[in-house]
Length: 468
Image (spheres, rainbow, N blue to C red):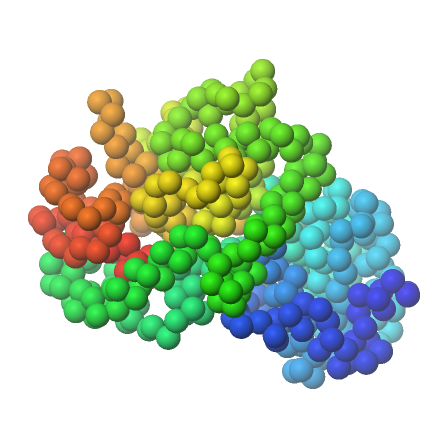
């Protein structure tokens, strides 16, 4: 019981939640980011929720904020149970921990109990413990929230709980770093009105492009400057806070994130050296289609399957997105063709730059392309909780002659092409393939609005705001 009190000091003194290091850091933070996923978990249901996302993105802070909210709403402190699973070796030990809480709390005749198990993906076969809890009937009037960094591990575990997750349509949630729109909200006082625009409407209706320009062009210089900051900072809360306080992201902060990623790979018996080589290789190809064999070039391993395995772990950990070639007529991915790899956040790209020994990433346009890729995934991918290695609604397209379109989105059975040209001069040759193959699309530019027979040009910062 002593261990349980260590993690749940509010059982003895409710106000102790205010002294929690995560709560204290949040209250003292200059950004106090409350992501939208906070409102997507209904704590009044009998359900088993999962909250997934990369390490150091703020999952534990979010859980502690939920706990504080419950206590402030009048929920009895003993009804709220939190446990960090970092040192829990297996399902048996996890079940014993939950059983101890059940035996303590059940006689109290609480109206509802709330159990938060942090970093459960570190526990081997954790789903067996949760299955036992539900099968014993302990899940009545109980809300379970499980957090983890490995999408694939949690997905496998959750799939082994059929019929035991409650009457919730989508019990799986994802916490990703701040989007560009959230970054703008936290780092400026700008509030351009873009919520009532649709991408297809902008592509088809010249009047909509004019209306968007009128409503945003006055903000464009400041938005472009903010995008420049986002390119180097990214959306991880600690990095954003350091940027706001000091004007940059210190090297020790980047090293902290890199150390966490390395340690996670070492926990699953992966080589730190091969991890570094894979990250550097992904940085080198930077959004260019390649095969698994091509990705394995310059990586010290006899088998491309090893490189594929490392890449898929990065994707399952929400650190790298893998996009597949679109079979246009069949409207689905072809996994046998070349893939494109994008870092999920500029900070993750900075880690690869650091590993490569470069002072900075040389091509700003490539960083913008990666940000657009990730924002399209966040906006259109319905099963993002499964990780970034099996994206089903965002693709790339390439002709047999090598003509390429950066992205094609499948949205409500309609294909919408998006090309990124983050450059000063735009000509019709920059979107001729998109126009010929798809009869139109959206060209993400550096600072130009235009409409040309089905092709709409939108400046990158405005386009990213549209994807919120």
